[in-house]
Length: 396
Image (cartoon, helix red, strand yellow):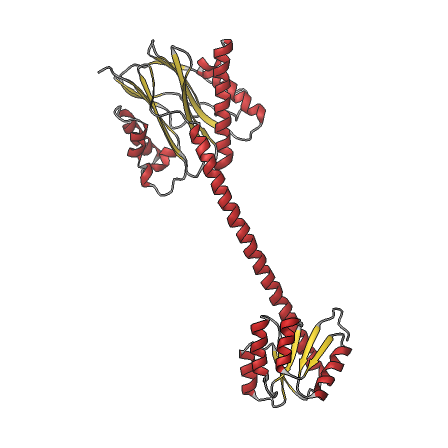
């Protein structure tokens, strides 16, 4: 049977008659055959022009078959070699196979179907081994590219983290007789949590905490878009007298419509408040922020905000502003829901109770609250953790 693909076979035998017999038969089978009578010449031939398969006599003067096998495999790893012996000694066969021979045949070969089978099996095995080597090389190259890509992503995420944190306000910050501090610990490089505070005019300042659904780059991008959107409403107030930024419910309503129209595919919870410095009044509205913000003052501790829809989730969502007295003896504490995950209590009510106890301690700023939560004691945080603290400063 003539092979459909021409393979190059090297025959090594010191007997010229046997060499020609193998050459003639294999040539008839469609192979391209080279026949050599010296082991040393055969090794050099393989170095210069490796064939697809080698047939080698075991007993030859000078360099014997086992030495040829070792030399060829050193020069051309993976090149299949069929050892042929006139003795059929079992020890010879074992030695050859241990050294990596593809097969072991005895001569004279009375049925050339045996040779055909051995040649076909050796070539197929060599083909599969070559494919495996190519696959491993391809996999190693892919792993190398993946490693390089991951390093680049980590570098990009670290750069993104620096940009995102550069957008955060200074901590602490003071507006009249009030102090604002913030703390954010991302669960990964980038945070879906964000806090901001800013002067609106000489009498008022605004602040908010937001928690975008999800983690990583997509959520972090939304926090940047949110800061930009709030910044536009602040600029509209300063330039055109637009009152949206001064009304928490109106701002949340406007942001909800804007995010739905933009189809970002993300929603966020948000608490926004405005402090009237001279009047000592807090006006605020909630958009799904949980746990609920807490005010600690001379009357004790109370939750504010109540149930409401997140921003960017429901068309026509309504938000309601609340107003409270807020003076030098008051403290407002906001925790993102990731803070609940850090509290080692079995039930939600017990975890909320821990946060309430912390919020009631008006001597703690945001960093102090985070430290009491044990943020740095956790090797892995399942969610971003954020704390925002607003405190009135009692004159000394």
